[in-house]
Image (cartoon, rainbow over all chains, first blue to last red; front, top):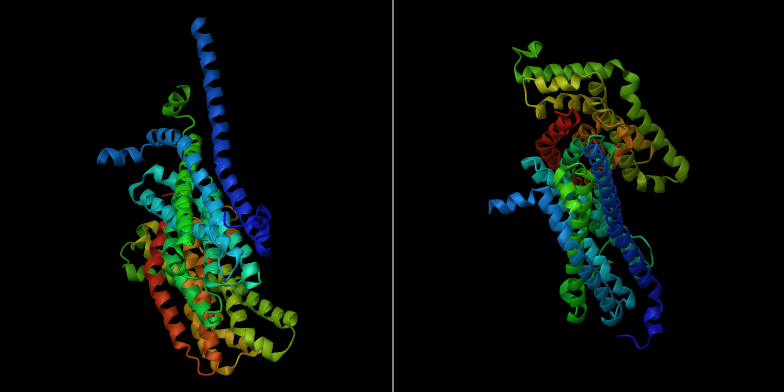
Length: 65
Length: 244
Length: 232
């Protein structure tokens, strides 16, 4: 590590607040951009699957009768 | 050769491809992102002029570079969709827009945070900052135009035209802003050119640029998969895919 | 359309320009709207900034150009809207000239009655802001050239958004980024003229080049936009 101690890495000679907040905001924005489509895909897949299952049971009932 | 081209235009093939590679690529790129950030934050040496605030460069510059490249990706997809009427190109264009906007926003926000300790102000009307701000508006325009249309097929065509018009304008905007800036303020603010950077700083920077490109590609796939699910929810191939 | 048969492309364009001009002139209040907007906003600046002559004349090139840009944005929002609503926009497709050319008469008429008009009366407002006399000609020519470029760019945005509900603010978002270079070069032309030893011909030449380029390219984008909006 370039810094002598963890606290030196946190403060970075007075610039720590700027640097760490910049990285935090970047990871926050990237997190939103990554998670939003993943969660939406998961919901869509669940919707489509449950629709398929419902159709399957309906056709199964009509076949049996 | 033609089969490969054909495969790229086929939604089932692309969907399956995304399904297969995302579980691998996403963790790998994210790990690379974390490692690159820690390298830049903790292991790269301090800049003797700017002190440690320069460490923002490891996210700021990659985000800015890829944000600009992303616009060309989006416009190229728009061109393909207009000329060859490939529907998947529409989807790719829609997938690229929010990522590009997010990257541009990251570049602007980190630039502002970097500006405070370096120039003493959160915002400076520097040529590059101004150009990035305009780029953000270009991205937001494409997203807003898509949302405004009811008919999504027509919306995609309109966005393709808009992104192409934007492509013609981006060099003009950059040049004119540069010109305006150079006449307004003599070079009081200057970035060190990449060649002036020491290797111990250059390698993490290059690594982060590559990582940001890779993350853009992975995010494209994640968005593509989501949009394909939404567009093809009643297609037979998707049902078969999800039943398996 | 039968009524256009026997007309050459050139006659058609001239007739259309005349039609649009008389339509615009028949509603003078609407035609003068951008001009009144320009006047109102220009008056607000000295009141907001204070009456110091030096401050005002320093800021005058920027103020005049920004307000002119906003008036041009207002003008763009009216482009194609009436024709879209009454269906005459669809007739353009049957014109004896390509669609890219068929949309030009309307743009020309709008520019003549708003952009050029604004450029012609701008010295009055410029003198109110204390702009030096030697900058008046560069101001007028930069506004005339720049508003033509903005009219063409606005035409692209208007063609893309004319079919959209509440397209106004969307149009602003779409075309303001495209206006930025025009604003930079246009206000530079005026600033150069104010400075001692400045030369406004270079920025004016850039505006001329921008006009030529947009005359060549914008009609195709406008035609593509109109086809999309008309769902053809």
